[in-house]
Image 1: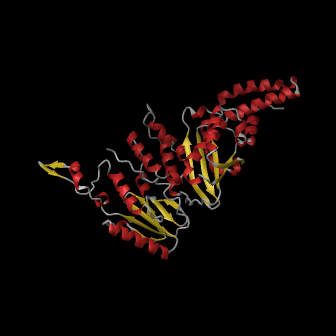
Image 2: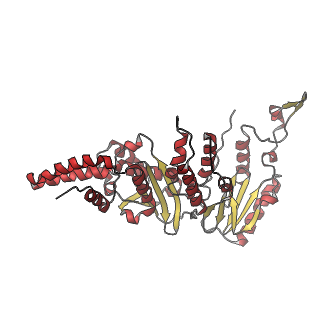
Image 3: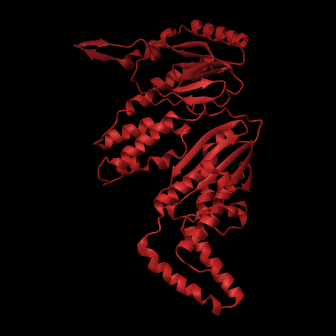
Length: 413
């Protein structure tokens, strides 16, 4: 029978560390072997070696329920303490002062001793201003990724199988919370994992890997959220992806990005912009739920989303009722992190090809007939044309749009 016991989210486990100054990271010795098995159940662990039957007296590694049983026991011992984080055999003790930390540390060690649990002192860190816990550097300023796992990627120069690409992506995914628009930047690698994709490691893939490694090495320090202060959620969408950055006045709290699926790429641009808001709110729900959130978007239509005629947006709008949000319009120049995603995909996915100039010339000839129309008819037709063009091109800025029209020698007067 499978035993189910919840594990803490490895990225949300740090949410309530704001204000802490001193840390201790404890690694428990021999992990699962710390737990005694009920004598009535030891026969369930029996193995046979050279005709002799052996039974485990302590919880072995490799058993289906071992991780759940261990986490359950650790929470039974430490679950009532607010100054300690438990993830299987790793413990993090955090305090606001050294005096307080000594009290917390003594209480923790007493509980370990009472339950006959031993510590691996070689892998533990006591009373530090910064410790490594679950692969992240924890300090009073926030959390940064520990770069130790990155070493295995530094010498990758040629990959000849999908399994190796999966291992590379798996290593990179650990750094996802610290890298903006990671989903889109990994596109040259993830495309090779598609069904019937030809396995070819070329300059595009190598440049992609090198760029991501550089960004990981320069990863930002994420700040601890303060639930007593308002949040700012900057969102943006492009032709093939969405992204968001969650902030507070003291810094960046987290990033979110997603590459759109085949169906989602067919959504209108306003639907994609709204989807970016909904998915980022879901992603950051545990952080922002119940708090004041200002959503900043460069799409003015989103500010009046209730007036948009879209079944999808009508459905999604109910999700906003779960949050305390207000939506503000901000120009792309004032929303640089989220908008980088959109600008990247615009240049990669929607180039204006030379062979399409004949079609633009046809449009130009139709527009030249404006003089024969009334002023109201010209205004209506021009408005429709610009709206469709703006959507088709992935909502570029006004200056960019009119420069494009000027380059194509389309006369709007």
